[in-house]
Length: 167
Image (cartoon, rainbow, N blue to C red; front, top):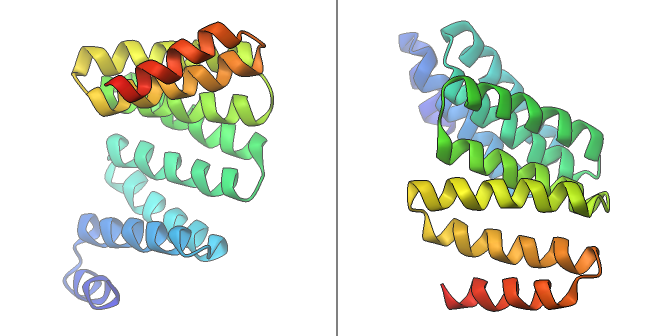
């Protein structure tokens, strides 16, 4: 990735450079290097903003939200994910909107806001069904199980958990 970053920079390919920085951010996040991940994502986001690439801006914002969540800053994670959702809604990317709804639902669960989480996960499930992403429908069922359990609705939680493994 370092060589790719240097090559894209050398030829002035900002889109390629933005993608490499994004990938470096993801690798850093997976390694637990959150400060480095944040830095790489921010550098990628700056390029995406210059290029007007709203789809990739939303993707980077979503990843910044994941890093903030990992660091326990749920307010910042929510803010990043809300920005990503806004961009994804503007470009009508239903699959990506479902990702943002899932991310926002996860933040709501972590904040013990189970009613909100259930609403986010319901919408994510609806969108995932529309676009035909069975894997994410199964994940939505699992997430709805967690939200239902948090609300004390154990029969609904059981049904969602069972459905998540059936798919």
